[in-house]
Amino acid sequence: MRFDTVITGGSIVDGTGEREPFVADIGIQGDRIIAIGDLEKAETAHRISVVGQVVCPGFVDVHVHSEISLLGGRDQFAAVSQGVTTHLAAPDGFGWAPLPPEQARELWHYTRFAYGDAELSLDWQTPDAYLGIFDGCIPANLYPQVPHCAVRVGAMGWDPRPATTDELKAMERTTRAWLEAGACCLCLGLDYQPSANADLNELVYLSKVAASYDAIYAAHIRYRLLGRKQAWAETIEIAQRAEIPVHISHERVDDEAAEILERVEKEQIDLTFESYLYPAGMTHLAMMLPMEYQIGAPDDMLARLEDPEVREKSITYLRGELRDGSQIVGYNRSGRFIGMTLAEAAESEGKSNAEFAFDFICEEAAIETFVMPWATPPEENERVLNQTARHPRMMIASDGVYNIPHPHPRSYGCFVQYLGKFVRERQLVSLKEAIYKMSGFPAERFRLHDRGRIRQGLAADIVVFDPETVADKSTWFDPLQSPVGVNWVFVNGVAVVKDGNVTGQLPGKVLRQQR
Image (cartoon, rainbow, N blue to C red):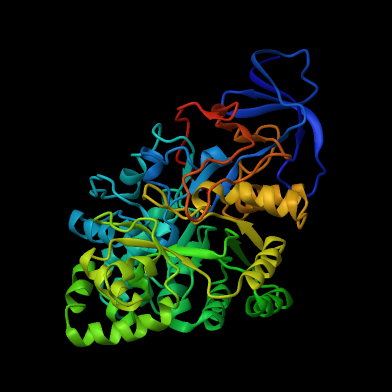
């Protein structure tokens, strides 16, 4: 038999989390894995020897702000260089279709902190029109989710109130349009506008629609509105009332979460979560304001902030939110203070941290992004990260932010950090379990039936890495550093990374849930 490519001599970790690594050859024909076994005598134009290296399924990133960067720019290959072959679109419910251009521009303004500078048409009247811009233009696969922010804006604008019956029906129609276009999940950002204004009735209503398509529910939960414990409880209630599997974005297993997860296990609630395993997040300063001042479209919020009384109350509130000013400036509209801490930037302006933060939001039209370190001591952070790394309900996802001057190091290093730090150095999880958490587990959870495993007949999304050297190089103050040890990455049978270098190939596809 003849193959396009044969990968020989590698130690295969198949992505199931069950089978021990085994040495075999893999034959690729077109975009599929056609054979696994002894292929020494097989005919092929490309025989790649990877003796001593690990061969595994391509990684699936279920929460990543990468869809626009995949189309081009500095970071087009940043994720695939660490083995990510499939990205889920619309994290936190962010999206810009299907909307009239004016509403899409408002949402683009609001979400730009997570996407940087880009020129987009912002005129997609159907989900398919939007998804059509990606096929043949991206190095990895893109898998759509239902963007709740866009769904809500399209039905009722930015109004901070519960939806009417007619508005719920309008949201249902848009949600169904996305699901029929192949979306795998109803995705929400319940601390972000306008999703934050959805009441429990709306969430359950739309979740029942999603469940009827065998989709799941995934959310950045209402930490700021409800508090963490109550936000988890709301998610569990949605799971029970809508009879839908639920997934929580960017979480960690500290003592509070561990207690809730014990209840989840005891009651057999169908709940998973993901983590990027760094002791800091990344978002915009506007999220640190009192929620009543964040509501509305960006121009409405900015007009509200001009009120002297709002400024005074906000600065008082920000003093408690921003603590020591250790937040790092990652991006803003004017390009000022990039890579500096908030405290350093504030001092340079002769202001307190809170005064600087409030004024910066206004001056930058709320287009600004910061790395946000956790408030807990370093030794506690490491204990929590170690607990999180091995939790059976946790999968890896980067929450990466791209095409900004100073990204969070997770954007360039999340997946390889797991392999280098938590598998090889700390030996907290086995290699087969780690690969499962980055491939088979997310693929199963998000209904991606032909990815996430090395098996005959499945898609040839394959990563080859050196288990002794694979590591992240990205740091807090030097984040634009590519990983090491990832030597080959195939997407749909095409080499996108060859001998550790990107090839420039763009074989990614828009994947759609098959129903």
